[in-house]
Amino acid sequence: MRKEQILTKIEKFKRCGQRFLPEPVCEEILSFYDIPTPPAQLARESGEAVELARQIGFPVVLKVISPQIIHKSDAGGVMVNLKSEEEVERAFRKILENAKSYNPKAEIEGIYVQKMAPPGREVIIGAVKDAQFGPVVMFGLGGIFVEVLKDVVFRVAPIDEEEAREMVDEIRGLPILKGVRGEKPIDFDSLSQAISNVSRLVVDFPQIEQFDANPVCVYPDRLYAVDARIILE
Image (cartoon, rainbow, N blue to C red; front, side, top):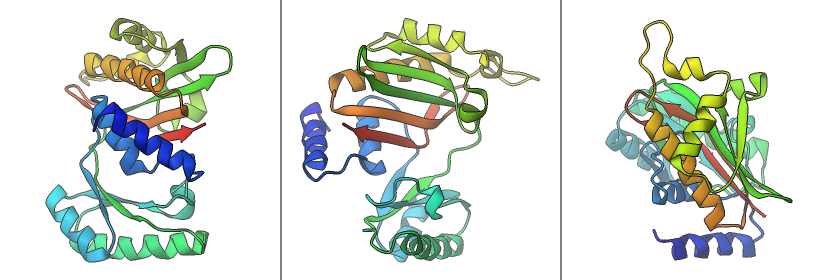
């Protein structure tokens, strides 16, 4: 995918009045900016989901993809840690049932079959378009810690990898990333690069009003953006 193709997709969604980009499109964009995501593909029926899970490798996560269902978990549209073909088939049917119950008018584009990332230290990388400063990048501890601890820092975009590393060093939870009780430190270079690349993304596409990747699971040798969201103006 090239920048021109990304712009074409963004403009297409804007013309349709759709502000939330589907997760498969978000991950295509992240791939262009060298931000790794777990292997994933879209399935439109249960047999296809089973075959994709077999190819990707268990365990997997299933997520509903629908323009009318933004908060998938609220709709019962996410099933995690599926370890067998039987579990995938049951989860596929259950997610469709939940989605239709949540919003009978929802258009279901398919079910996303994604490799389940191993446990890692969770961070959030985000950005928002500020009326005064333009795109602003945010970084902090991710997962449930975002709401509880609010341990986040901000920079006006774009930033380079050195500035991104300074952001990482500023959070109160830095010792968690450095490793406690014998844990190895995370891959700070990959994390700094990812933060810098997100800053380039939101500068390149001013149509983006809000971006967040949460959680980003970081390991001693790599990272994965497990879940990403892009909201257009």
